[in-house]
Image (tube, rainbow, N blue to C red; front, top):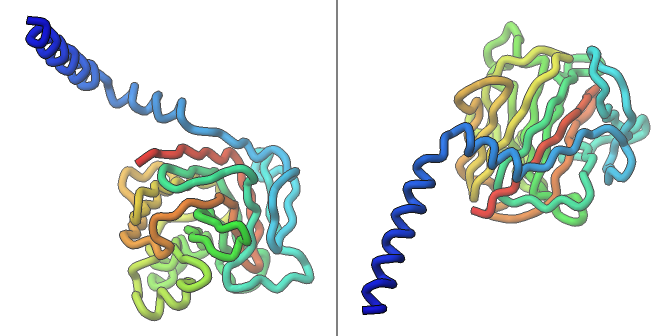
Length: 239
């Protein structure tokens, strides 16, 4: 008798739980995700772990932001320059940031974005970045190089472009120095990049080169680039 009652009660509770889950609206799901995220306003250069760059607060197009610049005497390595946020460990989830920038001078398109899965020595990591000047280039081939995924130290952009042309980079509409919203969604071996209010990703990577690893998160730039960052938001996922 008791066993029958317990079984019936478990079934009732399971059905109730499923009904409650079904009743959660997409808006409520978004609220839950927001509550589980962490906002880092980037309102101070203090405590950043920097590699090859300087950091200072500045105004850019009416917004207070963190500016990254390459060191004058520094020659960037193939992996670019990093400003890592201390105390963050990330594997799966989303990373969002507002960023703006472009080339300092010359023909370079500017290079700015996010690095993740960074090891303790800041030598091994993956990164996704924008080339703002390419976004509205008159040459369509250059437009197709507007956003890029790469992995250090073994899968830099040049190797990926030569061996897998068009697979790890894509077109996205960008304007030099305009504030841009960048969001990465990372799960297991897959990454999706969203820029501004795009509903669909502008870049999809199905085989992250470091595999399923955890590591740090950093703001990323490369040579001859002026870059501004604000409002970094990280949401870790357990799966």
